Image 1: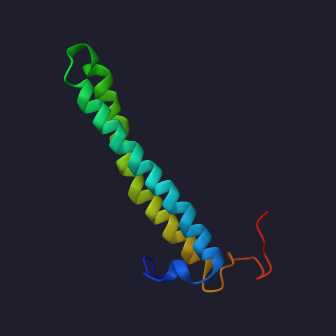
Image 2: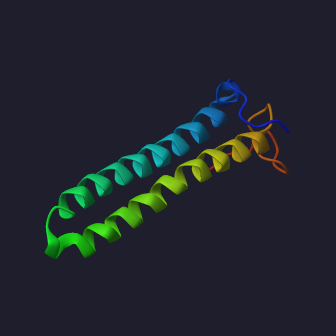
Image 3: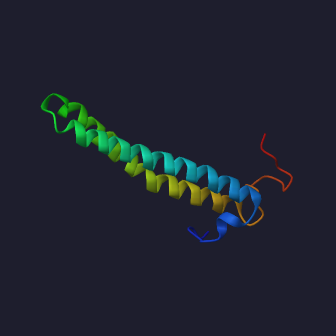
Amino acid sequence: MKLFQSRRFDASSRHRQVYSAYEIAYTTVDWLAAVLFVIGSIMFLYDDLMHTGTWLFIIGSVCFALRPSIRLARELHLARLGETGTEQGNSPDYRRS
């Protein structure tokens, strides 16, 4: 199983759906991390908000750590779909409700 193949996301409509869902998750986590870092930076300017700002940096750092995890999960999911767009163990007529 080869991961991170550049055109795998376009192999079928199911591949495109899976890819899109993971991209939404990745972008949301990326945006959240950036917002937390900006707010934490502003809070760091004030002594009484520094403790909360530190926690925002920590949470933002966790979000940044999630980014590669989301990418890896996406690639594993796409690889599991194979070339036909069906997950292992499911027939080609498999439909998600």
